[in-house]
Image 1 (tube, rainbow, N blue to C red):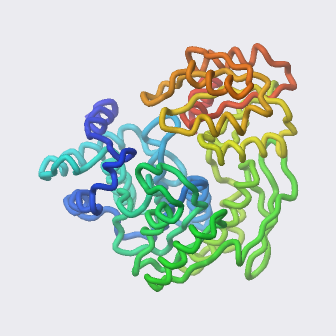
Image 2: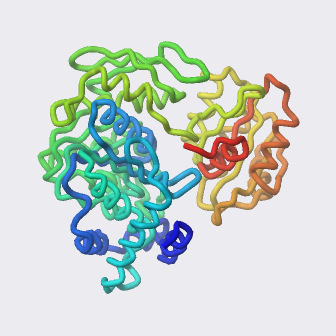
Image 3: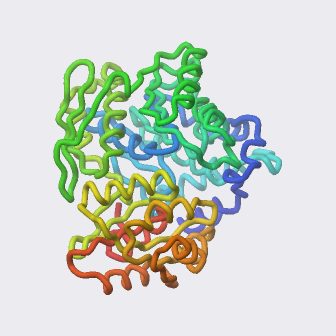
Length: 438
């Protein structure tokens, strides 16, 4: 099986995770059956399981980097990818090879062939998750950091007999047709990764106290110790430049002066959550403060307030809803001194384009709307219309690359250009500027 054949095979599986049918499956039974056929590759190593609405990928990457700095061999499983499916499965900070991905997909194919499943059986993400676990077992890793794909309760990753740490990052309303119509329902879906054999749970700062209470109650019911980051940790940005920021984190046992190569006040908060996780794992993974500092200083998480070009300044960020767009606008002002910004915007059809527009239009010089290559992308003309209705000067362009070229041609050397609306737009902008490697 080649890499291209592997992708074709994986995409044969009807991926209903983002429809209401996702919650129709009562449990992760089909995934469990597949993993049993593969001899339980998810077990046998220290496990950190991360769920949430915002920041779960960043926190996962930070904890993985800290574990590796502490000398632990570690795997990182995240989604989605920017450029290549192999990015979802990382060992030692590097994506597995296409050859390895194809070999592991063939192993999953052979296991699936012997299973009898109805139309509520396995989906693409289930198979990708199994590929990740196989890669980590084959590499004989000591630890794994696993980011939940969607929700938590019936997510493909919720298959561990036990785990050393669960992390719940900030929660907000998302995928409401799938996860629930209230913040409490969504929190319950995500908090379901906490079970009786979870050794500890770290709760990141929450904007909704109702959501936080759901997580606390879940931990109490499972008799799992809970570390509340807002109650026990504090953080402040001391300085920043185009390459990162200096953050002071206060926590029980002494403060830390962290250099973080990720921008945004939310990343400082994510770093505090990652430090809380590292503190929980201090004995089990032999993590010293020096490893925390080294791990955070070397973390990579592209496509999130990432500087792609300096003159004009080109920034890529995967903001795709009102809240993340508000955070992006704040960061553009606070970190880059930008009052007026040229935006290149693309979005998937199920995202909150109106919320995105309402947050970004007040600082938009012009908006170049583009349709990304993703099959669920919204038409550029529709995006331009939404921004135009809210007072922006907006044009629609046939591709992200051409939209970026138009934006750069229309901008002076001191201008700020921002690619946003989805990670897929950020990825296409990165690739166009020669940054396809992550």
